[in-house]
Length: 96
Image 1 (cartoon, rainbow, N blue to C red):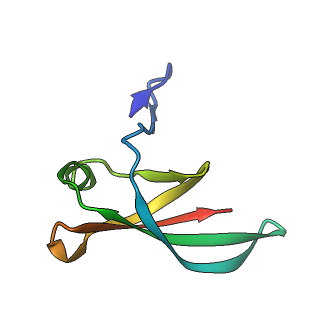
Image 2 (cartoon, rainbow, N blue to C red):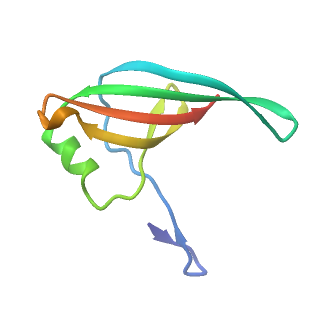
């Protein structure tokens, strides 16, 4: 978080790194909003486990996002699969 000239907190994001992942589309559903159709996109990213990534997910950070090909996705959950320290699954939601 940073603060502006009025001392209001502003949420900021830092680039934490680039990771290789297997990507799975969970579902696409049509949503009517503001007089136009939008597509809600949910994906699942499966990454190889790393201690630094696990520490980041479990730290005090309240929100983080995934950027893929210029599209920003909000992270809904990030889980160390079966607590086996082999893979991490990150579920995201975005709009295209």
